[in-house]
Length: 222
Image (cartoon, rainbow, N blue to C red; front, side, top):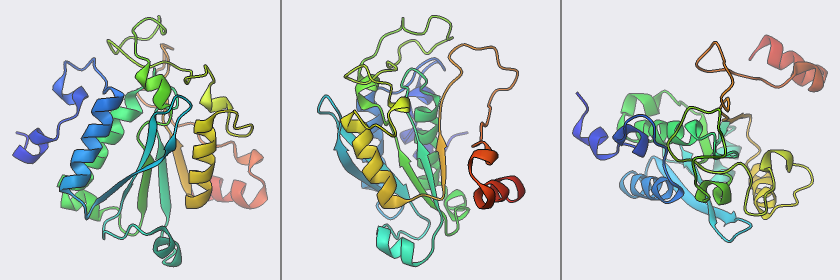
């Protein structure tokens, strides 16, 4: 049975029939409630504004309630960064991150498992696309019933804009990423209807493109 605390903080996916994903408004409200009730676990703040004027947010979870970036850097704390919703029509990462952060907040043993690691996340990067919901732009994808759009408010693919930064969203991301300088980044996507044999697929960085030091570290240690 679910605890009363978990019942009170179920995600829209968990409340539905397994074929729903959180809207942008639901996602933001969910994290705002968690941050209000668990201020010693979750820091939640606005990091900028999208191309259509929507707020962009980030969250930070630590096991000891230390949220100051300079203090964390001085302590040499590893930063694990999870970016979600760069393509909001592939929303599983958005919902999974909501459930994970919820579990960090209500399960002391799960929070303690972080150790010194900092869990940094952007709940929805492409907020413009997440707000542009429909059910027809991914004909081969089995659900959800309604989902966001791949492009942002200017029809730019943010997953192709990390270097040029034509979009305001990419400029916000660039500053945020540079400020935090994470050790590991996981960017969540969905298969878009392709027939994969596995439920989940991890696609790591190509080691040969990282160079000698980092390439060897990825192969041998990670």
